[in-house]
Image 1 (tube, rainbow, N blue to C red):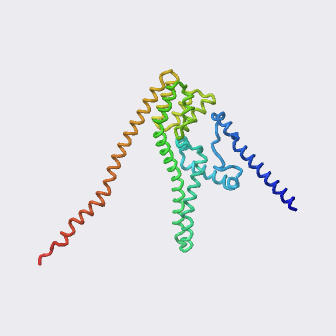
Image 2 (image 1 turned 90 degrees about the horizontal axis):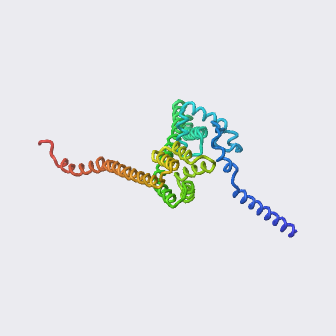
Image 3 (image 1 turned 180 degrees about the horizontal axis):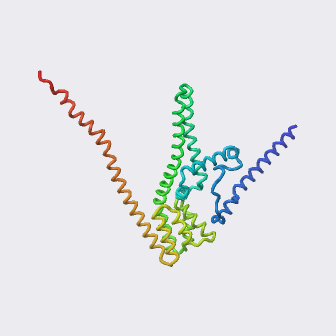
Length: 308
């Protein structure tokens, strides 16, 4: 009996080790979409998706079609698909317009649910308040939808600030690599392997386009087109022109890095001036009235305003 139990335990241990080894090998294998996607960039993508979840999921099977229909309704009501697509690219999100509309519907449903639960309790106690409470819940749904779009704008602004902070360092690294004798593509490869950040992601995309056969000038032109920052557009256009005409790339990168540092310095000074004005608000509206009251109150109390 003990031999049988030992054999079963050994068999279970062997199967477990085999499963662990297979999982490790599968994790190290490059997924098929990662290998094929660079060659399918120019193919048209579908304009709608069933849901922002995997099709094999039970949630997608049950709630995917209604959410997709609600997303299309939000798209028809709000419009602006071109602006949304542009901001999604600037934010660096791997999401299309259809998935973003579904996310807006989910945010709206979350806002609706947060108010629907207490509103249902109040409506059960006072039925005459049901209609105003329903209107309030619908307003919460609309605010949730608009809040998701506002969040996208905030994501775009945060990514652009990160790009501006990284730009001088990335430009200097590229100029040093090119000055050391490397080609622009090799310099891009070295900088992308040594750096992390929003601008590095854009440069990795440029490098991936170049490796799939896109000319370097065209890849930089596409980077300038999808970027929302004038400094990045000038960087991409200047680097493309320098590579195309054979002009020194190092001088261009040094000059652009200096321009960005000067612009950051001016922005910091302007922000400090605005903060200085804001710091006067508590002094004027809180501290100064308190000082005036403490200074004049004893005199007002001691004054005899009525003649005996």
